[in-house]
Image (cartoon, rainbow, N blue to C red; front, side, top):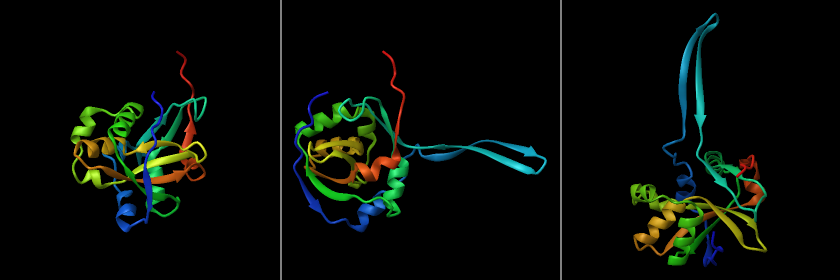
Length: 176
């Protein structure tokens, strides 16, 4: 993976539309009923919760992969339980190419986004303020599409590591 380019940004005020955007549900998020059984004490409904997650594999961050629960992070921001800073970033071809490569963006997903989708801010976790290390954990496809549509900036909710930590779980490293 290439080195993260410098991202020109300006701090902006959080607006109600930013908070509302985190209430948006990803199409994969849902409670899915897997079965209903009749027991002695009545009907039992069995279900599975599906979450939008992001898997981060970076030796600079951790020696093992990390899974970030995006569904819970967005819900916590929406509920006012997770602090964040809003920034407006200047997009560029260099940043587009970096995000496309490092976040594993898929052309099919980029092509399915609507202009309404492009209004929602991305989420970046700020790992190390001294090294300016961030990870785009939600919104990479939107950032790429905005650049391709000629929109030269994008908004991001910067979440610090202490705030994001409760949504991050270590995963076992795969051999190979």
